[in-house]
Amino acid sequence: MSTATAALAATGQEAALRGRKRPRRSSGRAAGTAWAMLAPAAVLMLVFLIVPIILTLSLAFTDARLISPRPAEFIGLANFTRLFGSSAFWHSLLNTMIFAVVIVPVQSACALGLAVLVNAKVRGTNFFRTVYFLPVVTSMVVVSMLWMFMYQQNGLINALLAKVGITGPDWLNDPNTALFAIILMSAWQAMGFHMVIWLSGLQTISADLYEAASLDGAGGWQKFVHVTWPGLRQTRTFILITITIAAFSLFTQIQIMTQGGPLDSTSTLVFLAVRTGFAQQQTGYASAMSLVFFVLVLAVSLVQRYLTRDKEVTR
Amino acid sequence: MSEPLAHVADDTAAVPAADAAHSGRKPWLKGLVMALRIALCLVFGLPLVFLIVSSFKPDNEIFADLGTVNAFLPVGSISLDNYSGVFDRVPFATFMMNSVLISVVTVAAGLVVNSMAAFALSRMEFAGQKIVLGVILATLIVPFETMALPLLWWVNQLPYFDGSIGWLDSYEVQIIPFIANAFSIYLFYQYFDSIPKELDEAAKVDGAGWFRIYRSIVMPLSGPAVATVAILTFLPAWNSYLWPLMVTQSESIRPAMVGMDYFKQMSGSSGTAWGQIMAYASMITVPVLVLFIAFQRAFINSIASSGVKG
Image (cartoon, rainbow over all chains, first blue to last red; front, top):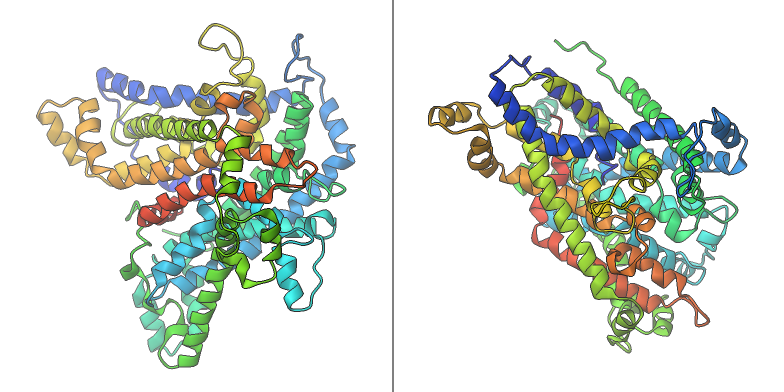
């Protein structure tokens, strides 16, 4: 969830900054207290967030190893040359892209559907909302093990498919279905999270707008297109960015279910980086992968933000 | 910034006309929509029912029941054998205590550290404030996974408290890097901004210092923000997997999520011990599910406010 919530910068940042008056210089003592209260968080963030970010940028150009008696040496672009010449990297990049391109629209659309279903004054709404949300509070480690069992050749899903006369594949051991199986499971796990976010967006839309639309004779679909959808613009940006970042960060499912296989068909950027930087201890090379990953996240966030920007000039 | 925290868990807040499917004109459509809701309940709920039910069955019966509705019912040779098997295989109590310790300390320390920082940023005035806030918010875009490997290298170079070098294989390395959290600061910041600043002025007239205002006025008014931050930092701490996988070697400090790996590695001649896996998975899941159901409203509202625009 830490990654899922990371996209706030895109939606909340300016608003937070805009709403702030330019600070007047205040008495030295108050400023001292302010810095003292800020200090614990500031120091921790400096050491465990800012420095690692800078390290990602710099270690990528060195031959640093996780455990090594000699200091890291600058080796220029050698890590990147090696990376761009590696088929494992291109496979992983492609898989990461496919995962994101499929899961972003599917998961956000289904989550919106769920939100609309539970955003009604019907008996039991709270119950439904709770059940749809259950997978979100189940850890991805548990979900991965459970679905690994369900996806077996003789597992639960194929047993159910057999009931309707379909012979299911060996989901996770077939290069054609493994990534798809992981996408399906990941969407199942996280959908409730985005349902709640859509729901909070739906509830910011004034009921008056729906009434006005009804008076104008709008039907359900027209109301959705002309009232609901435009009213969800902010929520949409937030959801698109959070799902995309979470998709790019795909790791746990791969580590537990497939280890990148079969035939690299489920290897992802983060999985490859962990294998390189942790198992093989090549920190420099793994940092180069992390840097590519970071640039990718940044680029996608900027593009999405541009595409979903304010169309009209506001005030 | 109108509502700093969302309240989607209130049924009364539902917008009645949001979906026309519920307009009374088409009762068949209404029935269809309800059927869909129930079908989706099965989709999201049944796998978890299957998990818990299977944890009480011997392996051969788990497989035998698959094609029937029995897969979701506690029938057959129900026993606690899988559970006792788990305790024989792994130091379960140690893993569990480690997870509790790591998450509780991360959350508790995070609440103090992040709320203090947000207080300074929101209610006090000092030079450089805007820059600090901007930097904190800018870091929100960086997923942990992008810097996990450089961070691993970095904590391995850091001087440890006893003077040796390297933080690996300790509780500290699993807790301290995750205490300060830009998102928590942002949530507190947003909430504090909605509390009238006149309160501070009044307290100052009465001679209260800034820290006193933080502790005795602003924090007591910020219950919902505390609950939100606690929940949003507890879940990732409890579920954390990648980081402890890399930084822990000793069983004595491993958290429960990494403990799951033991069952994957031990699929010996008798095949994977699925019953035990289900038992282990149930034991690390059910406490969180119970917490969620008990504090359901707070959970859902906290997730909702993570998406509310500031």
